[in-house]
Amino acid sequence: MARDFTHVPFHRMQAKTPVRDVRGGGNLESESSAGGLLRSTARLPALFPEPFRMPPVLRPSRTDRDTDRYEITQRAARVEILPGLRTEV
Image (tube, rainbow, N blue to C red):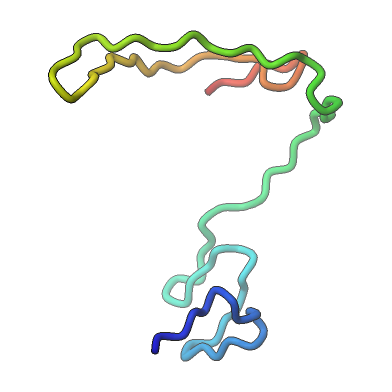
């Protein structure tokens, strides 16, 4: 029977390789980090200050017997995620 490790507390796991730093994403081969924490100076807004705006339902550009096909264009834009602050997505 396979053991389910999702229910074992991390401090009780026995690793073959010692864990050096769980926080930074480093690895034993290069000791580098996958990234760092970048803290924002923006103030967080009150929860849900604006009502939810439901986007329109996208209609398929083509439909065959058992498949709906959609055309979606992806592009960069500056949007207001936090009130008063524009962010590029």
